[in-house]
Amino acid sequence: MDVRLGQPRRVALSVPIFLYVAVYMAPAEQRIAQQHEKDAMERENITFCERHGMPVGTGEYALCAQDLMDIRAKQDQLTAENMQSTL
Image (cartoon, rainbow, N blue to C red; front, side):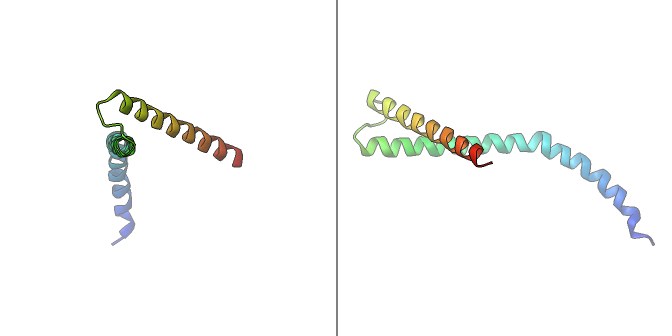
């Protein structure tokens, strides 16, 4: 019996599974990862701002959290620029 006869069938079954993962699962996983990152940043904001006397729900906290987000955005931009310059 030739074992290779099963290969086209495996390939034919693999393609729809790959497409399902690529189209449906990957974007969902990406959204989950983004939500986890957002949640982690919010916990960091709370920890940092409260440590420095700015409790959640106050105007000071809102400014502190926004400043932290601005710092992160600037750092991300610098990192991206550095990566481009090294390539």
